[in-house]
Image 1 (spheres, one colour):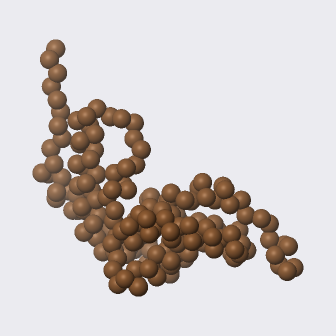
Image 2 (cartoon, one colour):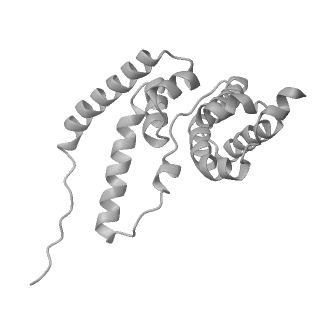
Image 3 (spheres, rainbow, N blue to C red):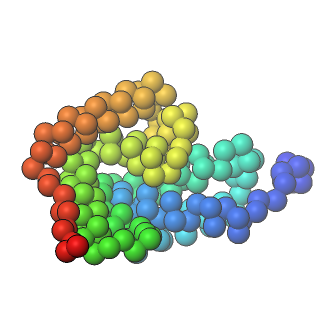
Length: 183
């Protein structure tokens, strides 16, 4: 009881606003199912509300992503399958309504990049998502994935190097549309 009195209350609404969407995207990528991912994120916040707040105070992102990942992986273990990329979520990111040809180009380029990313090993995809979509540090990614910080760095470096090479090879075939307007 004395320990509970020393731990300050968690600002649950602020944490929910900050982390709900990134956790939902992360869980959806692991599970391949947005509805099940919602359940996992909800369970993560329920667990947060029940306790373990002392661990959370030092690194809320680390705690939330770790709990969310573990819950999602438990579901995958039960079902013996993992899907690592959900294009639907990535394509639904808000944008500033470009011209129709620009939107089509962006969708093609996005799909193009996602197809290249999908060729990477699952671990490389996971660390790239944590780093670039969720803006986590190597240390936080290390603690979430239970890999060493140097291994996280190697995975990210190798993934980016592979993406550059594969993008360079495939981009030669990608020709952007430039409409000509009558003057």
